[in-house]
Length: 365
Image 1 (cartoon, rainbow, N blue to C red):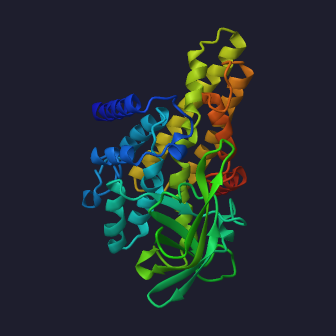
Image 2 (cartoon, rainbow, N blue to C red; image 1 turned 180 degrees about the vertical axis):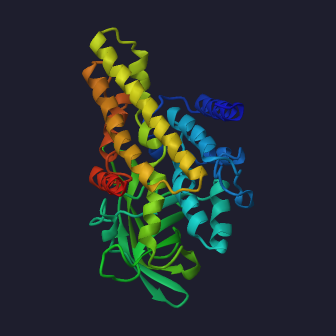
Image 3 (spheres, one colour; image 1 turned 45 degrees about the horizontal axis):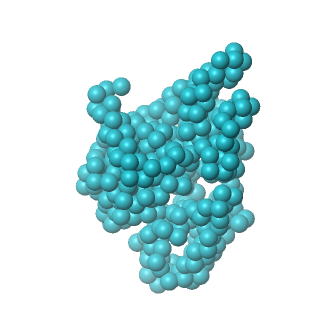
């Protein structure tokens, strides 16, 4: 690790320690999705830690994706409250950079790098979850733009979002993957209704979002009309290829390591988890290096997400079978992670989708 990257890690640790001094409490699992603090995200922005790899013209720092991974690893490991900026910084900004018009880049990217924009994802629908190509939300061409009608679900932080990424159908083709288009939508537009979904832990970050005759200006099309499937597959690789696919249950792993188990068979379990973590981190850094070479990590991200999900769940199983901790209630480190775990295998693509991507990659090899 070079000195500059080490300094980045130290800076993030110090920042999170300062935040925890004001907001004491246990380090929670899945904080990248459940920990929302807009002031914290804006402090990261002030330090140049949002949009780190983007051009300075848009508020970025023109650093490497490997540098960004060092920052996100620390934020995830420490359970920092990063949900306010995570989606915009992780995948919307890169998608806009790759496919957005110059005008869209100038409008949207500085809002993300300053911590002003909060994005939600309008992808999943009641009949289109992992089969994203089955979306039924329609965007009809009208004067000056599009009229959107449809229903999205499992939309995290839609009730707090300033903007939505929206995948909608603009035409019908012979194949369901054809005729999809991506949009950037202001969440205060007339016709958008957000309804909360409360999860097993009694928390509200999921939502349903209804679009009823919502007008979206034509300049808010992201990329090419009808090319949404190719673009969203690339975007999902940013979602699948990050450290959050490995570190969502890291606080539970810390408790396992802190217990210092003595039994030989238990040590083998713990040692196996540590070895797998090292392997998965290596894979995540390979994804970052691919990005630094200008390569969309569509293929490399799928096995990372597939293996990372198994790892996160196996941490919970190891904690349970090793009999660690008297407190496994819903507010405990283990309990919080367990209640969050049903979503681990679905977000970013179910196992069947990921295995299909991996199989196609092997067939081409």
